Amino acid sequence: MAVILPPRRRRRRTGPIPGAGLTDDSPVMVPPRIRARHGSACEIAIVPVDVVAVACAAEPAGGRSLYSVSPHRSTPELFDTDRVRNQYREFTPASRAGRAVHSHPIQYRGGRRVRFTVRHHNSDRNFAELNAPLVAALQSEPARSALVAAAPPVRRFMDDLGATRMRIIPYPLVIDRDEFDRMAEAARAMLEAQTVVIREFLRSGPPERLLAEFGLPAEIAPFVNWEQLESVEQVFARVDVLPTPSGYQFCEFNVDSSISGFEFHDCYQVMGEAVGIPWLAGTPRPEEQIADVVTGAFHQGGFDRVVVCDWSSRIGVGYFGFELLTETLRRRLPDVPVDLIYHADYPQRWLDPSAGKRTLVYRGFMHEDMDDDYDFITRLVGSGASVINLFEAEIRTHKRWMAMFWEERFASLLPAGVRDMVTRYLPHTVSVTPENRDRLLADRAEYVFKFGHSSGGHDVMLGAEHDADTIAARLAERGPDGWLAQRRVQLAECRFAPEAGAEPTPHHVVLGLYVLGGECSGMNIRADRGSAVVNIHQSAASGWAIPMDADERRRLIERVRAIGPAARERH
Image 1 (cartoon, rainbow, N blue to C red):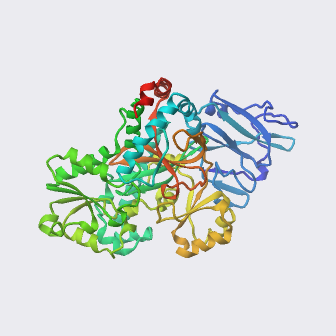
Image 2 (cartoon, rainbow, N blue to C red; image 1 turned 60 degrees about the vertical axis):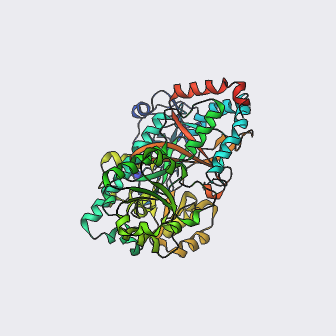
Image 3 (tube, rainbow, N blue to C red; image 1 turned 30 degrees about the vertical axis):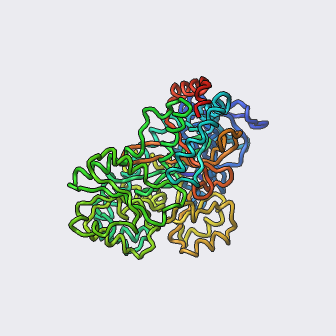
């Protein structure tokens, strides 16, 4: 936390600067601590700006970072402005560029105030720049023709799995391995942080109080495994990640056994075989990671049957189902009956307690899929079947966590290292309340408004695209207590082809980092050429980003350039 000093402190200086004729290239005596923090791999320049006495520096992560704050509004990409107190202003860092924000006295002379800007020579954290050389190689011959030839078998593979409405990016992309590992560590730590907060709720009051905190109906209480909430052993999550020009920001936690999108790993396996490049060799297959959890539970529980259960309304919708997971479980448990069953076809005899207690169920349907007033889930739980992921997932997946991690009463429960991760990766988020509603609407261009209990891209509004009355009306429809306002971050536009043989075009991208039973894989890519609200149910294409270090990326590009005629003619 940094405090803006009142005007009487403006005499403070750190060194001389020119008082007139300042340009981006003007020489400046840079405070040693700023230069030490940013190192030699950056350019530091100054420009005049109307600021108060403190400039703020963020840990570098590539791109352009602003080091100042105006008297009335701070820079949206770097600072949160929710806490304003007269001449003193406090702000919590929501930096898209680094781990923390530090205060530095501003340099000025003769009434001229200045700001620092820094250009970092590091593209590893810029998803678009990182992928530009690979995309160039994949768009060139002979790779381009080979990928066109590989497209039909990939399409057949998807259609055979029922994903007829889903579009695939015509080649995989990459993400820096170190960045991926850091994000994976942060994602796991935040899921554990959820557990810390949940334990405190359960320790200090009745379980129903936890449901009330998230605005969840009391009717789901019988279908919550409270013991599972105190562990992450059977947690399946996809953390949605926004690539910015200078790093990555987490925008949502999707925690539920019904999550999908990891099937694209298999799609690119098919594509790699078609072009003769094993680009996924050595990377974990997500279905195997889920199967690790399911088979572990099976062997510990004395079951004699595994059921993967989806909702009947999901038949024929044109998206991936659970065929790949079912096949994986059958291979891992060759002597055990493993069935993919839709709820309307669930055998009545399996709902008898004598059979139910010997049945392990992997829930593939969402809470919102149920249209039978809890009838099926009541009979399933009543049979004594053990269900991996009951509706405790509705607590972990709620968007309110994005605000809770910033609230002192919850943040104080977390270790300092986790709080640093929150600062680094989570855009500042607040719950919309009657007290802050009008201010948030006035500053709506700086926020994304989200309903806490929603999915599929519904109930997400970019403040800059709506007037205040429209947003206010949407807030009132469901009541303001369920809404959150998340600081909008600048997205990095990534250029790649929307389909095989096409020219690269700019896309908005959301990445999905999977945490499956504590193990990470990924990343899923969702991309849209138009809307900044990216969702596969709203026209987005999907793909996969492979974690690779610089040497691995170089070797992959060499393999792409060396694709021979056999790969182009194979299909």
